[in-house]
Each structure stands twice: as structure tokens, then as C-alpha cells.
Image 1 (cartoon, rainbow, N blue to C red):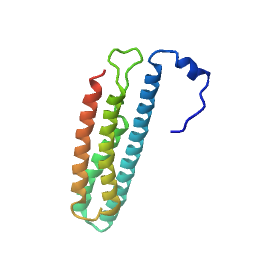
Image 2: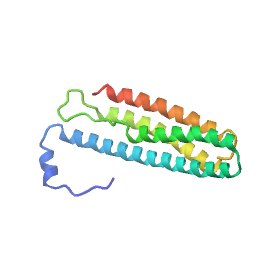
Image 3: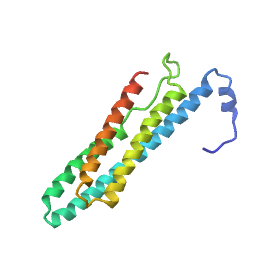
Image 4: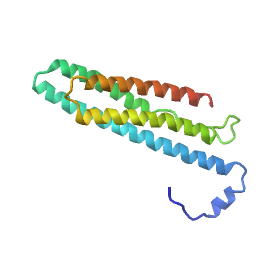
Length: 160
């Protein structure tokens, strides 16, 4: 993050009690959103690679492998929507039940776990797609990400 020169609005906002903490939390929410958008993009790209691979399987008449990858592809498509539309840690300015910086960092830790698993999916799809157990590995990672998303959702809903 680059430091910018403070302006008159920054000086006025420093006079409002609690605003600086709100601004820090807002920046953490923006970072979280950008991370999830990037993860969703990687998932979409992985799905696209699977489609390309499926086309080659169809050309070689390997329908069994194509069906295995279709299950993973559909799951990735659903996962894309879940990541892209995941709720983020937001509480209104005057809410009694405010998300603190530590709470937003907990949400971010969920997103980092998702990031690690999405990275593994991406690597598998890019490098090891023709190995027999690759589709299974992708499915296992998708299920794990879905569990993390549920935990993340439940954590955030404590503050709504």
C-alpha cells in the first residue's frame, strides 16, 4: 500500500471518533474482496483448461476420463460462484456488533486457506491433468474449500 499525502477530508475524519478504525477495517474488506476476485478468476481459468482437456479426451474417444473431469469441471463452476459471491466482513458504521480488525484478519485467514487450495487445483490442472488421480485430487480440494467457505460464512454471520 502506498502512502498518500493527507488532505482536508483526512483531517476532518480524524476528528470523528472511531472513523480511523472504520477506515482500516474498510481497507481490509477491500483487500479481502480483491483476493476473492483473484481466486475466482483462477478457478475460472482452471475450469477452462479442463474443458480444453476434455475436448482432447473426446477426440481420443476416452469417455470415462472425460466423465471424471466433467464432475470436477461442474464442481469448479459452482465453486467459482461461491467464491465470487461470498459474503464479506461488513458491519455498518453505527452497528453495536462491529467487526474488529482481528475478526477481519480471521476472515482473511479463511481466504488464505482457500487460496492455498485453489493454487493446488490450478497447479494440478496445469501440470498433471493426464494423471489418473488428478480429477480426484481436484474434487477433494473443492470439497475442502466448500467446508472452509461454510466456516467463513458462519463466522461472518455472527456479526450480522
